[in-house]
Length: 107
Length: 121
Image (cartoon, rainbow over all chains, first blue to last red; front, side, top):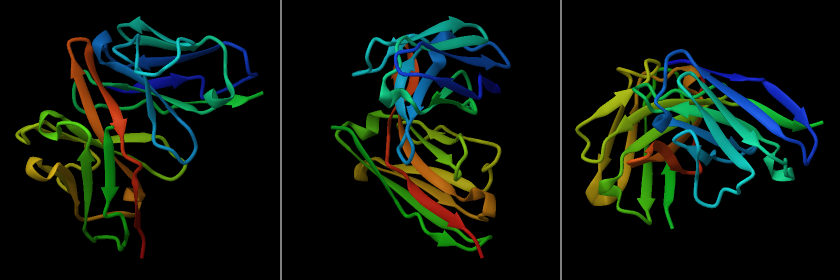
C-alpha cells in the first residue's frame, strides 16, 4: 500500500486551520491509519490512531477522519508547536508504510 | 514511564555489518510487538521491520529483506537489528518503536530517540 500526502507544504499563520490529506493506493481499514508529528531533530510523536482516536495527551484541536482510501488530519487552530512535519502510516498489512509527509510552516 | 533507548550506531564502510540494540523499560516488553523505523538525513520515515512479542513473526521492508534481521531477547528487555551488506543509502537515524494493539486498532505509540548509522568509505 502506497500512501500519498498532500499538500507537500502548507504555509499558514498561528490560529489558522490546517487540513492535511493522506491517500492510500488501496483501501485501509479505519482501525489501521495513524498520524504523527515530527519536530526537527526529534523522534515522531503519535497524534491520532485508528483514524480518529487522539493519543494520550493530544489536545482536542487535533482531529482525524476518513475511510477507505482517503484520510484527513485537521488542526483547528495552529499553535506555535504545530509548525512541524506530519506523517501518516497504515498498519493494514506489511509493509507498514509511511506517507512522504506534509510540512506545515509559518506563513 | 515507557523508555526505549537505542545504541550501536556508528560509522561503517559499505559492505560492512552493524548490530543495533534497543533497551526497553517502563512496560512489559514481552507482551509488546516492536518495530524498527529509519530516517535518512532530510528525508521522511521508512518502516523497516516488525517482530511480534514472542519473536516468531517477523516482517521486513523490501529495501532491507535478506540483509537485516530483527530479533529480541525478552529476558533482557531488548530488541536488536542485525544489519549486513550495508550500503551508502542505509545511512540514517534508526528508531526503535513500540507497537500498540487494541480492539480499536494498531499504531506505533512510543519511539526511542534514535541512533545514527553512517555508511561511508
